[in-house]
Amino acid sequence: MKKLCVIGAGTMGAGIAAQAANAGVPVLLLDIVRDPADRNAVAAGAIERLKKAEPAAFMSKAAAKLVEAGNIEDDLGRVAECDWVIEAIVEKIELKHALYEKLEAVRKPGTAISSNTSTIPLDRLIEGRSEAFARDFLITHFFNPPRYMRLLEIVAGPKSDPELVARVSDFADRAMGKSVVRAKDTPGFLANRVGTYWLQAAINAAFDLGVSVEDADAIGGKPMGVPKTGIFGLVDLVGIDLMPYLKASLTSTLPADDPYQAIAHDHPLILKMIADGYTGRKGKGGFYRINKEAGKVKE
Ligand code: NAI
Image (cartoon, rainbow, N blue to C red; front, side):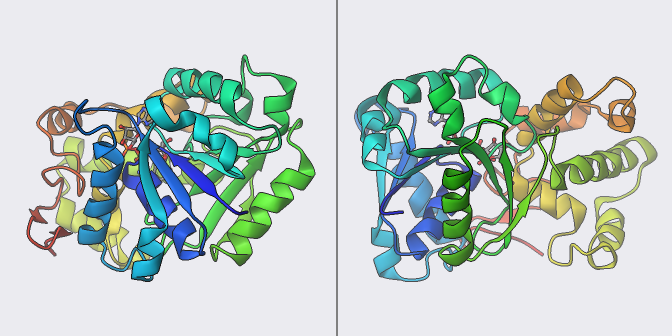
């Protein structure tokens, strides 16, 4: 892998780009144009925020210099320079489909294209795409924060080229320090199939039964293997705005009698928090307040 492209400079994309740069590989980080006067501002801003919020995200100044900010309108054609394109845009299938259609027109055959989706099955992601695109496509599901979470779920489809999948897996393992787990193409794969049930159950218990966030995290922290954040701290880290997308994606892909369907719920308080900008660490704070100066959540 000589060059990577990450599309979507949000919570995950910026961290994945940093981790690829830590492996010594140049990375093009693309996002949408929000400000016509500063077309790369979204991706550039994400890199600066990451450096502030997580000073150890880049292992060195040299690694930080390897990430170049760009935008999808001007720079999408540059994916032809890259050996691996990682899509980390919002968890909405129609947006991912629209991006893949554009990517198909400009990519170089043999370039690996992977999605960081949390829940959307691979066969749905490649709907409408060519056989050649399907051969080069896989899911690489990184965990948050990408610098510290060693797990990487890889999902290959029946059409994915085994050699290309092996190339990505090998690079993730050797260069990016990931422990690769191969998962089946099922909704939520392995980790989120369990994890989303557990997060939703905790949210329902807190809001509907009046369990405090602190009590839930005292139990859902160390005793349940989430020592640093607990359950609600984890939702703050993941991004509260992701929760309705995860729910919508899973309820539309899981069978009607799946136990998750009975508890899946866009709680009105969650929707209000999102509408008011309390999306977690990336927003004004979430279940825990954030310390703006340090860019860190107050313990
Ligand atoms: P986010 O909302 O923080 O960032 C998404 C970024 O994509 C934004 O900067 C947005 O401007 C950009 N974007 C939207 N449409 C675009 C397009 N057409 N082209 C280029 N950029 C576009 O999202 P987050 O949380 O980083 O999630 C990204 C993906 O990673 C989703 O599929 C999510 O399910 C998955 N994921 C998220 C995790 C988390 O902890 N937040 C963990 C693992 C996977």
